[in-house]
Image 1 (cartoon, rainbow, N blue to C red):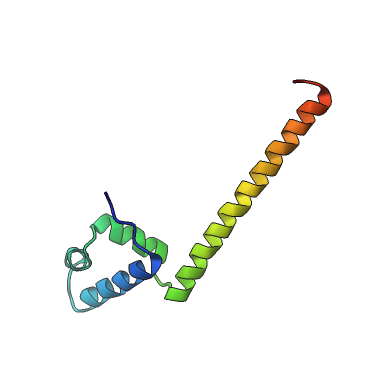
Image 2: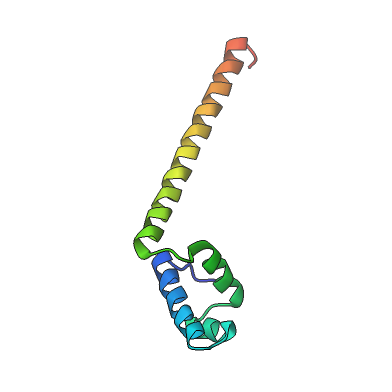
Length: 91
């Protein structure tokens, strides 16, 4: 099973890969050194490239808060629909 990396670990690995690339290494060398596939490297670079540690933590906190709020809105919407059906007398 694949290991779930924390954002802080990902940013650290991306920085290590940047060092390898700056020294003239290839992307394949950098990926081998940090222990991930090229696909993961490019996905991480797209998502976390240019972020600092505190920014990544803040982003993850905001994503959790967003998910919590979405669940709350969907629960309230469902309750509203149920009450509207009950008000019409359709059980």
